[in-house]
Image 1: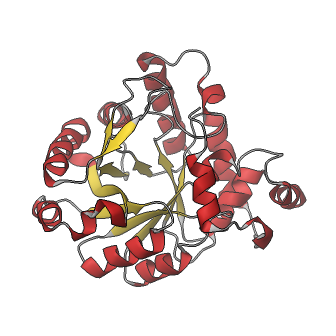
Image 2: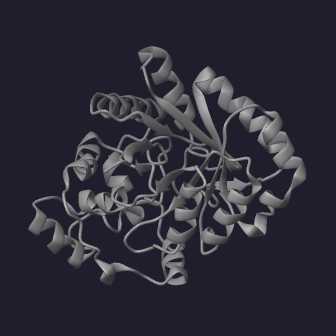
Length: 299
């Protein structure tokens, strides 16, 4: 496997998230101090296990803050730090806030959030991505935004989501200003694969998010075919689901969204899985997949 596992901080930087079981992972104490300590412990465990790619976003609550503190206190060598702009965190540390984040894909938001990310992450920011670009936001057709990004002098990326992933990925590649793309691909949702192949062939690093389908592929009992295949191979469902991504030749960094050290360890077992079955029976229609995802409750 040429791809590597990274750690995404979406489930570590805020008390609410749409991963199944997130609330149970965090336990009763969801204070800022508790999540700060948890984040630093998981980051320590990840780095000790060989993880070097860490991904955050302005809208992940205090994820950049926690990550920046960890970077300054540990000064880890060889890490690659990516973050994202374009959503504003509006939950105020509440789980039930509606909405928890609001999209703003304009040039002023880019400049403000880049300054905020740099203040928190210092000179460790290696990649700055548009957060969840879609055709309806028009961000990839907005000359003011694209010019501001190019002028900022930081390596650029774009993350995508929803049923338009393939279209948006191709548009991002055609623009020629990005060095990386980030997309959802998992055993349920595979529709972006052709565009990810094209992006990798063009020299862009492909980051894969939501490889466990927001927890739907992480726990025994939710995907019986995956459970059976994992048991036959002597591994866990989450490890097998992530291993399926690692075997894709276009994959560069496969993000774990672990919120506990135990979950991280289970995810990292993906690196030990040998031959991976296709498990085509798990594939879902893209529209149905994204509708189901949007209906997931936070925590």
